[in-house]
Length: 251
Image (tube, rainbow, N blue to C red):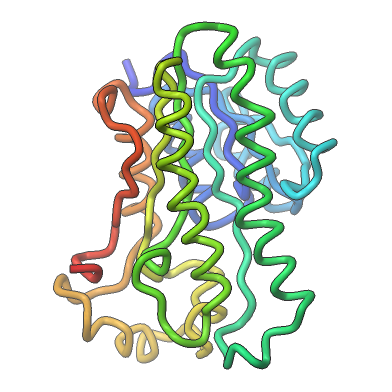
Protein backbone atom coordinates (compact mmCIF):
# COMPACT_ATOMS: atom_id res chain seq x y z
CA UNK A 1 0.00 0.00 0.00
CA UNK A 2 1.32 3.42 -0.96
CA UNK A 3 1.11 6.34 1.43
CA UNK A 4 -1.57 7.97 -0.76
CA UNK A 5 -3.40 4.83 -1.83
CA UNK A 6 -6.95 5.54 -2.98
CA UNK A 7 -6.53 9.32 -2.95
CA UNK A 8 -7.21 11.69 -5.86
CA UNK A 9 -5.19 14.86 -6.36
CA UNK A 10 -5.04 17.92 -8.57
CA UNK A 11 -1.54 19.30 -9.13
CA UNK A 12 -1.14 22.60 -11.00
CA UNK A 13 1.98 23.61 -12.88
CA UNK A 14 2.57 19.88 -13.27
CA UNK A 15 4.30 19.99 -16.64
CA UNK A 16 7.75 20.60 -15.15
CA UNK A 17 9.77 21.16 -11.99
CA UNK A 18 8.08 20.63 -8.63
CA UNK A 19 4.68 19.91 -10.17
CA UNK A 20 5.96 17.12 -12.39
CA UNK A 21 7.90 15.59 -9.49
CA UNK A 22 4.94 15.83 -7.12
CA UNK A 23 2.57 14.25 -9.66
CA UNK A 24 4.87 11.31 -10.36
CA UNK A 25 5.57 10.63 -6.69
CA UNK A 26 1.90 10.91 -5.74
CA UNK A 27 1.13 8.30 -8.39
CA UNK A 28 3.98 6.10 -7.13
CA UNK A 29 2.35 6.31 -3.69
CA UNK A 30 -0.98 5.13 -5.09
CA UNK A 31 -2.83 8.38 -5.87
CA UNK A 32 -4.67 9.23 -9.05
CA UNK A 33 -3.59 12.67 -10.25
CA UNK A 34 -5.08 15.23 -12.61
CA UNK A 35 -1.92 16.77 -14.07
CA UNK A 36 -2.76 20.40 -14.81
CA UNK A 37 -0.67 22.84 -16.82
CA UNK A 38 -1.04 25.51 -19.46
CA UNK A 39 1.83 23.77 -21.28
CA UNK A 40 0.29 20.75 -22.96
CA UNK A 41 3.57 19.18 -24.08
CA UNK A 42 5.01 19.37 -20.58
CA UNK A 43 1.85 18.01 -18.98
CA UNK A 44 1.64 15.11 -21.39
CA UNK A 45 5.30 14.29 -20.74
CA UNK A 46 4.54 14.04 -17.02
CA UNK A 47 1.58 11.76 -17.68
CA UNK A 48 3.64 9.46 -19.91
CA UNK A 49 5.53 8.16 -16.86
CA UNK A 50 2.40 6.54 -15.42
CA UNK A 51 -0.66 6.88 -17.69
CA UNK A 52 -2.70 4.49 -15.54
CA UNK A 53 -2.78 6.94 -12.64
CA UNK A 54 -1.91 10.28 -14.26
CA UNK A 55 -4.25 12.20 -16.55
CA UNK A 56 -3.52 15.53 -18.26
CA UNK A 57 -5.86 18.52 -18.21
CA UNK A 58 -4.89 21.79 -19.87
CA UNK A 59 -5.75 24.84 -17.82
CA UNK A 60 -4.78 28.41 -16.91
CA UNK A 61 -4.86 28.86 -13.12
CA UNK A 62 -5.70 32.56 -13.50
CA UNK A 63 -9.08 31.84 -15.16
CA UNK A 64 -12.12 30.95 -13.05
CA UNK A 65 -13.75 29.17 -16.01
CA UNK A 66 -10.69 26.93 -16.30
CA UNK A 67 -10.95 26.03 -12.62
CA UNK A 68 -14.61 25.09 -13.04
CA UNK A 69 -13.66 22.90 -16.01
CA UNK A 70 -10.85 21.35 -13.98
CA UNK A 71 -13.16 20.40 -11.12
CA UNK A 72 -15.69 19.01 -13.58
CA UNK A 73 -12.91 16.95 -15.19
CA UNK A 74 -11.52 15.50 -11.96
CA UNK A 75 -14.96 14.60 -10.62
CA UNK A 76 -16.05 13.07 -13.91
CA UNK A 77 -12.86 11.03 -14.27
CA UNK A 78 -12.16 10.05 -10.66
CA UNK A 79 -15.39 10.83 -8.78
CA UNK A 80 -13.76 12.87 -6.02
CA UNK A 81 -10.73 14.99 -5.16
CA UNK A 82 -8.95 14.66 -1.83
CA UNK A 83 -5.85 16.77 -2.40
CA UNK A 84 -5.21 20.10 -4.11
CA UNK A 85 -1.61 21.16 -4.76
CA UNK A 86 -1.41 24.81 -5.80
CA UNK A 87 2.03 24.62 -7.36
CA UNK A 88 1.76 26.78 -10.49
CA UNK A 89 3.96 29.85 -10.12
CA UNK A 90 5.67 32.55 -12.11
CA UNK A 91 8.43 35.09 -11.60
CA UNK A 92 10.03 37.88 -13.53
CA UNK A 93 13.82 37.85 -13.77
CA UNK A 94 15.68 39.11 -10.70
CA UNK A 95 16.22 42.84 -11.26
CA UNK A 96 15.85 46.26 -9.59
CA UNK A 97 12.30 46.87 -8.40
CA UNK A 98 11.98 50.04 -10.46
CA UNK A 99 12.59 47.94 -13.60
CA UNK A 100 9.65 45.62 -12.89
CA UNK A 101 6.89 46.45 -15.35
CA UNK A 102 3.24 46.72 -14.43
CA UNK A 103 2.53 43.71 -16.65
CA UNK A 104 5.16 41.65 -14.79
CA UNK A 105 3.72 42.70 -11.43
CA UNK A 106 0.21 41.76 -12.50
CA UNK A 107 1.24 38.40 -13.91
CA UNK A 108 3.16 37.56 -10.72
CA UNK A 109 0.12 38.19 -8.53
CA UNK A 110 -2.33 36.67 -11.00
CA UNK A 111 -0.50 33.34 -11.13
CA UNK A 112 0.92 33.17 -7.60
CA UNK A 113 -1.98 34.63 -5.59
CA UNK A 114 -5.12 34.74 -7.72
CA UNK A 115 -4.40 31.18 -8.89
CA UNK A 116 -4.41 29.96 -5.28
CA UNK A 117 -7.57 31.96 -4.50
CA UNK A 118 -9.44 30.52 -7.49
CA UNK A 119 -8.14 27.01 -6.87
CA UNK A 120 -9.15 26.90 -3.22
CA UNK A 121 -12.59 28.35 -3.98
CA UNK A 122 -13.18 25.83 -6.76
CA UNK A 123 -11.98 22.81 -4.77
CA UNK A 124 -13.20 23.33 -1.23
CA UNK A 125 -16.97 22.98 -1.71
CA UNK A 126 -16.84 19.38 -2.92
CA UNK A 127 -14.48 18.54 -0.07
CA UNK A 128 -16.89 19.97 2.51
CA UNK A 129 -19.86 18.19 0.93
CA UNK A 130 -18.11 14.79 1.14
CA UNK A 131 -17.45 15.34 4.85
CA UNK A 132 -14.27 13.29 4.68
CA UNK A 133 -11.77 16.13 5.05
CA UNK A 134 -9.03 16.87 2.57
CA UNK A 135 -5.67 18.53 2.03
CA UNK A 136 -4.58 21.75 0.35
CA UNK A 137 -0.85 22.25 -0.22
CA UNK A 138 0.34 25.63 -1.45
CA UNK A 139 3.85 26.09 -2.80
CA UNK A 140 5.17 29.31 -1.29
CA UNK A 141 8.83 30.28 -0.82
CA UNK A 142 11.44 31.12 1.79
CA UNK A 143 11.13 34.60 0.27
CA UNK A 144 7.75 34.92 1.98
CA UNK A 145 9.51 35.67 5.27
CA UNK A 146 13.11 36.26 4.17
CA UNK A 147 12.80 38.55 1.13
CA UNK A 148 15.81 39.73 -0.79
CA UNK A 149 16.41 42.57 -3.21
CA UNK A 150 15.61 41.97 -6.85
CA UNK A 151 12.51 39.84 -6.34
CA UNK A 152 10.47 42.17 -4.15
CA UNK A 153 7.07 41.58 -5.73
CA UNK A 154 7.60 37.86 -6.27
CA UNK A 155 8.44 37.53 -2.58
CA UNK A 156 5.42 39.68 -1.68
CA UNK A 157 3.17 37.34 -3.67
CA UNK A 158 4.51 34.36 -1.75
CA UNK A 159 4.03 36.29 1.48
CA UNK A 160 0.35 36.52 0.58
CA UNK A 161 0.25 32.75 0.07
CA UNK A 162 2.03 32.22 3.41
CA UNK A 163 -0.59 34.35 5.20
CA UNK A 164 -3.56 32.87 3.32
CA UNK A 165 -2.40 29.36 4.20
CA UNK A 166 -2.87 30.10 7.89
CA UNK A 167 -6.21 31.81 7.36
CA UNK A 168 -7.56 28.96 5.26
CA UNK A 169 -6.38 26.41 7.81
CA UNK A 170 -8.29 28.27 10.52
CA UNK A 171 -11.42 28.63 8.42
CA UNK A 172 -11.63 25.06 7.13
CA UNK A 173 -10.16 23.14 10.05
CA UNK A 174 -13.65 22.41 11.43
CA UNK A 175 -14.33 20.56 8.16
CA UNK A 176 -11.16 18.45 8.69
CA UNK A 177 -9.53 20.15 5.73
CA UNK A 178 -5.84 20.71 6.35
CA UNK A 179 -4.05 23.60 4.63
CA UNK A 180 -0.26 23.89 4.64
CA UNK A 181 2.39 25.41 2.45
CA UNK A 182 5.87 24.31 1.44
CA UNK A 183 8.45 27.09 1.39
CA UNK A 184 11.43 26.01 -0.73
CA UNK A 185 14.84 27.55 -1.09
CA UNK A 186 15.98 28.30 -4.63
CA UNK A 187 16.25 24.97 -6.42
CA UNK A 188 17.62 23.53 -9.61
CA UNK A 189 14.44 24.01 -11.66
CA UNK A 190 13.67 26.02 -14.78
CA UNK A 191 13.18 29.12 -12.62
CA UNK A 192 16.73 29.14 -11.22
CA UNK A 193 17.88 31.80 -13.69
CA UNK A 194 14.81 33.97 -13.11
CA UNK A 195 15.27 33.86 -9.34
CA UNK A 196 18.99 34.51 -9.36
CA UNK A 197 19.47 36.62 -12.47
CA UNK A 198 22.36 34.43 -13.63
CA UNK A 199 22.76 31.37 -15.85
CA UNK A 200 22.12 27.99 -14.24
CA UNK A 201 25.63 26.52 -14.02
CA UNK A 202 27.38 24.54 -11.27
CA UNK A 203 29.60 27.56 -10.62
CA UNK A 204 26.64 29.93 -10.25
CA UNK A 205 24.74 27.50 -8.04
CA UNK A 206 27.72 27.46 -5.70
CA UNK A 207 27.42 31.22 -5.25
CA UNK A 208 24.08 30.79 -3.49
CA UNK A 209 25.06 28.29 -0.80
CA UNK A 210 27.19 30.51 1.44
CA UNK A 211 24.26 31.35 3.74
CA UNK A 212 22.77 27.83 3.72
CA UNK A 213 23.94 25.83 6.76
CA UNK A 214 23.60 22.53 4.88
CA UNK A 215 25.79 23.82 2.08
CA UNK A 216 23.67 23.31 -1.04
CA UNK A 217 20.67 24.68 -2.91
CA UNK A 218 17.42 22.75 -2.97
CA UNK A 219 16.52 19.81 -5.18
CA UNK A 220 13.10 18.96 -6.58
CA UNK A 221 12.95 15.80 -4.46
CA UNK A 222 13.31 17.85 -1.28
CA UNK A 223 9.99 19.53 -2.03
CA UNK A 224 8.38 16.37 -3.41
CA UNK A 225 9.19 14.42 -0.23
CA UNK A 226 7.73 17.17 1.94
CA UNK A 227 4.54 17.22 -0.13
CA UNK A 228 4.07 13.45 0.14
CA UNK A 229 4.37 13.66 3.92
CA UNK A 230 2.00 16.63 4.25
CA UNK A 231 -0.56 14.97 1.95
CA UNK A 232 -0.45 11.68 3.82
CA UNK A 233 -2.27 10.53 6.94
CA UNK A 234 1.07 10.77 8.76
CA UNK A 235 0.46 14.54 8.88
CA UNK A 236 -3.18 14.25 9.95
CA UNK A 237 -2.80 16.75 12.82
CA UNK A 238 -0.65 19.26 10.94
CA UNK A 239 -2.38 22.33 9.52
CA UNK A 240 -1.61 26.02 9.12
CA UNK A 241 2.10 25.27 8.81
CA UNK A 242 4.41 26.99 6.34
CA UNK A 243 7.15 24.37 6.15
CA UNK A 244 10.57 25.73 5.23
CA UNK A 245 12.47 23.27 3.04
CA UNK A 246 15.66 25.25 2.91
CA UNK A 247 18.63 23.50 4.53
CA UNK A 248 18.46 25.97 7.42
CA UNK A 249 18.56 29.13 5.29
CA UNK A 250 15.79 30.85 7.30
CA UNK A 251 17.38 30.30 10.70
